[in-house]
Image 1 (tube, protein in one colour):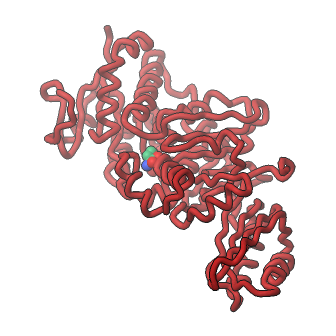
Image 2 (image 1 turned 180 degrees about the horizontal axis):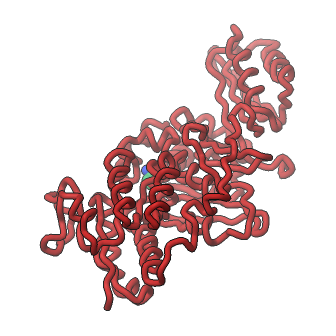
Length: 439
Ligand code: HSE
């Protein structure tokens, strides 16, 4: 059987998974493809550590040029991660006329446009199915499954670590700090877990999804990013009382001539499918104007699921090689001349509903003072809860608003938080549901 050689950079968790998938599923992949994918060289700085796999003689190397300068290797996998060495390797591989497969969400989110340019210039392809949602084929869905649609919105649970933490906090009433350590032990977390808990990893993934869905470059610094480290069991409990669950969502929506792109903890109705996605699992909800709502669910991280996506990309490129031509599906889902830079709507202009928890002195007039300030900013209240006094300390007043503008809410809270009767900064959690669906 004819063979197509592949070079792999990075023998960490996912790299080891790729080796395993190519071995275990060698036959079925070869039968699907009609040729065999053959891992010719693996480059890593550390080729001594035991990965629990026996490697063929001479396959491991610490020298990148053994892949980059090998004319027999047409496909390079980059699993180094980050935007330093990985970027250099990807640029070098594309410039050498090699196709690239990567799982690197940060690289794509921040440098995607320039990498597309290099790839086009050299007539090769960069595939990144594993960058979002691990094993869930969401990139291919946006590029090839739903091209008949105008995408209206995407809501994604795209970080398993954050979802695991929120699930544990919800189910067991545990505080954030206690659950974080446990989540890291699962091996899903980024090298720096602040990427997971502060929403940065989700923002990388959201930027990639939005860019493909709407055919626009997304300047990464314009994606509003807020993490889960300030979420408390108390707010989760209140959410439950209102029929909501708190999830870290990546949200992107078409909105007039601009798009929204934001990552933040979000209250969603607990009856929705997305609210049922628990633990380290990921799910991406895509609304197309023809197809309606669709949901893609599965393992968003881990060696084998992520390797499934990486090897899927290898198969796609190998098919291109076999059938001559890589231009069938544009790298950014739209041909370059039809990718229009769309403005990302500033967070201040976003309209949504809000959960607000005030910590105030328990005395007459407090509630009317707060609602008066909210009214001054045109913010209308949908529900209010004030629980009884348990001690002499501040008491929580909890409100759900009707749809309001972020800027108005922020300004109202600045006024409220500056009041002498306010004991602590007001907690704000955005809500995503349809006003029309309210009971
Ligand atoms: N740290 C990521 C997560 C890994 O927890 O989902 C997958 O990108």
